[in-house]
Amino acid sequence: MFDQLTVREAIAGSYTLVSNSLSLFLNKADARAPLYVFWLMTYRCNSKCLHCNWVVKNMTTEKLNEELVSKERLDVANQLAKSKTFGVTLSGGEPLLVREIFEVIKILKRAGKRVNVCTNGLLLEDNMDKVLKAKPDCITISLDSPNPEIHDKIRGGNGYFEKTISGIDILRKSRQKKNPKIIIKMTISKENIESIEEFLERFRGICEHITFQPVQNNLIHQVPDEGILFDKSEYGLFKRKMDDLMSKYPFMNNSYYKNMADFLFNPDSLLKTGKFRCLLSSAYSVYIDPYGNVKPCLGLASAGNFKESGIIKIWKSRENCRLQQKMRDKGNNCICWAYNNLFNQYLVEAFKILKGK
Image 1 (cartoon, rainbow, N blue to C red):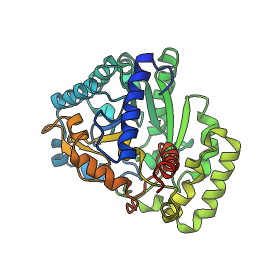
Image 2 (cartoon, rainbow, N blue to C red; image 1 turned 60 degrees about the vertical axis):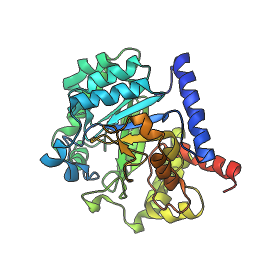
Image 3 (cartoon, one colour; image 1 turned 90 degrees about the vertical axis):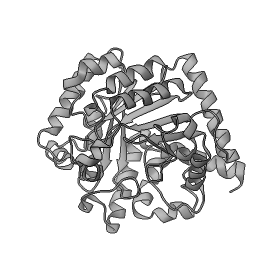
Image 4 (cartoon, rainbow, N blue to C red; image 1 turned 30 degrees about the vertical axis):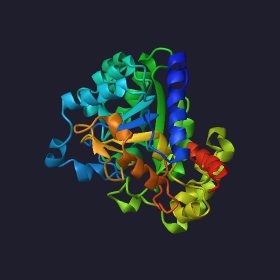
């Protein structure tokens, strides 16, 4: 997503990166904009994944009626377009269920933003022309096994694997000069850990990148079926699997995958040894939920709602700064694990050197 930047995009992104970094190391509110925005456009979804409780909690008629309407979503897009934000990820739920998503992408792209769409892929084929005309930079597609039966079990529906694969195939054939980029993401759980290498061998030739995220049960990710979580006794199995994969696939030989076993089975060790501290999310990004709430973390209270105060005004506010400081405090024992933790760990080391703590 970050390759082939124009000079204008690179310069604008660099200024925002520097501004966010200064706010982190000075422990003050940022005066510019978040480098990156994660916008959950809806909680509505056409899957019922074993590792995702958002559908169960937020797909009641009452909850869905509280989500932003079309005009409000376009207002969010226009506010982000006018900001100094570098990139935006559009996710959900399933973002392709949002009727105006393609207009949102166009608004952001006309303003020079980098746009990533996270989808389960079920609606890709039906919306291919609209996707290609909107021109997002990247599409991240969830696949949870090379085995159709296991993928469909995890995703909660028959035929989901074939539908998603068909969408990926058509996207590959229809896109120009490998744009948009394709990322395939698996959520590792008890259901699919034995098939990771088969997954890599089957899919790494049809996309630009593959990433793995562990199943987790915390403030942000709650699972409706705890049977998908790993048992403490499976630490050795998981660690050996990760070590083997890191030795075979160079792109996996980094601290994100090296520390994944400790995150799943002994997260306190990462906190006590200082290997994890929430710095990246607390300084460089913000979340917008389907109701328009602006948060430095989905697990925290809202810093404000865009309908009452503009997104960037909320970003610069004392309340947002207070929540950011709470996230990065040494006493914060909340921990989650996504691929951006690789960059977070670089920040942790820099923070130790520059701040001495």
